[in-house]
Length: 401
Image (cartoon, rainbow, N blue to C red; front, side, top):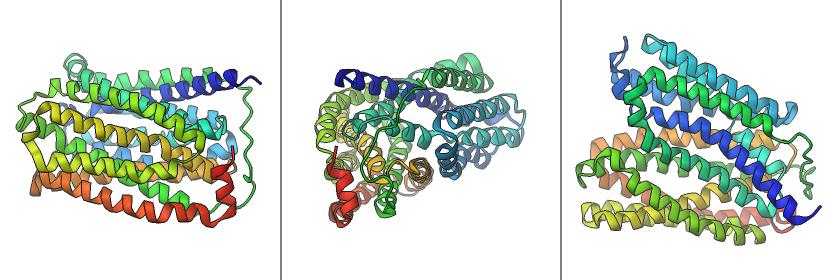
């Protein structure tokens, strides 16, 4: 089969899966900036119940990622993707109809039961060649980032028109649009043949990558707990204008990331890139924490570009490496472990970010996150290559195309 045709098929698959995940995440992200304000009039609302309504989605997501991955290994990826999207839509409908906080919390929990992130990554990995997986994962990751940025621009205007109930109905529409996208996925694809997939998989690199994505999303959530109040308070930059920082810096980082991922993917050397990406996260957040308002908006934009560069590299490189070391048999379950830690990281980052911000201020919160990234980057540099090269089976998976 011609290489150009295979590459275009892989890109189409990645774009379709990115659309499915992005539609689901767009519905979620649009709720977050306005929820605590719009939910105040519901019977039973307290700050604690509001926080529980936001956080319970991440908990149910984390709890069900691995069971959904296990089911997708047995039933197939497509049926489980559809089941997850229907559960997400049902949860959105329940939340839209809720007339009290307990029912709304139940709706959010049901939304989280549509735990399909790991299944989508496994689907992409099944039908993408190893040297192209980092590109496919980058497309999916950037779709999520794009959903976040779009939600920052649309959340407040849509909330003013639709209210909280209307926003939840919008999540239902997005979920059903995702169902239509899943139905367009071709049915005649053959999984990529990989060497050594029948052998027993060493779980050490799987858990190391899962812990890495836990930290990555904990730090990301912490940053977006700390940064918006900092922009409003110290920089006098109103919330409606924050996209002017996020969107350009994300786009510049993407222009740098794609050529780099293409080169790294061809040599299957993602594990060498990971420590440096964590160091980039650390450098950007440490500078933000130390310099505070002395940066100016241009300086802050440069640091946000460095941050997004490190984040996008890790968001693409880690699942590509995970897909290779986990093998094709049982991949959904192992992707589920990875996704569970990802959502737990977001939950932990929100809690720790709020505590650090309230107790010690934004500078200390950013420096704490930066220090954690430095320590983890050093550990990765010492441990990851050793783990990957101790086993001949894993060395084969990393080096063979």
